[in-house]
Amino acid sequence: MLVPMTSTMESPNASSVGTGEAATLEGFLSGIATRAFRFAETGLRHREDARDVVQDAMTKMLAYRDRPASEWTPLFWSILRSRIVDAQRRGVLRLRWLSPHGDEQQSVDWTDPGADPSRSHEGQEAWQHIVAALRRLPRRQREAFGLRIFEELDVATTARAMGCSEGAVKTHLSRAREALQKQLEDFR
Image 1 (cartoon, rainbow, N blue to C red):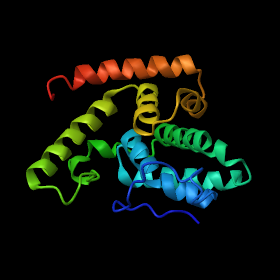
Image 2 (cartoon, rainbow, N blue to C red):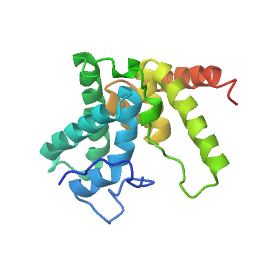
Image 3 (cartoon, helix red, strand yellow):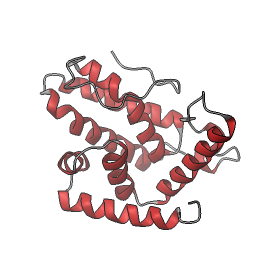
């Protein structure tokens, strides 16, 4: 069972693996779907491409159903990261981000719909600045930042997912933080 990707899905705080709720691969995929979509959308800059890549990564994960649940997180992020890179290399994007309509009209609204309008607007504006700054980062820095900060994976798990050393993860993360601080200086 694969999870349909919609913009109305709730984002869990942590994956359900290990909580006793759902120690199945389907439960794991359901718990990580929204976060994976956000990660893919940031890297690909297009919602439909992100949905396709996440769905492809989830389908690939089905082959690893018999692996221990403790291996699913780094394995999934590694597969997803590879799928994003593959999509970028194949030119699946076809320069959609250069279209006259731009991504801004299609961006995901992650703000609280119950918040007052001024706070909602400020949250959307802040997120747009963050996403724009993330998109300007080199791919490896963006991946390290997303996995370590947004997904809260530890250094070892991030290194396995990215296929590099723990030291490389720390270097990419440090450089990403420095670049983001410079880019977002005026916005603060």
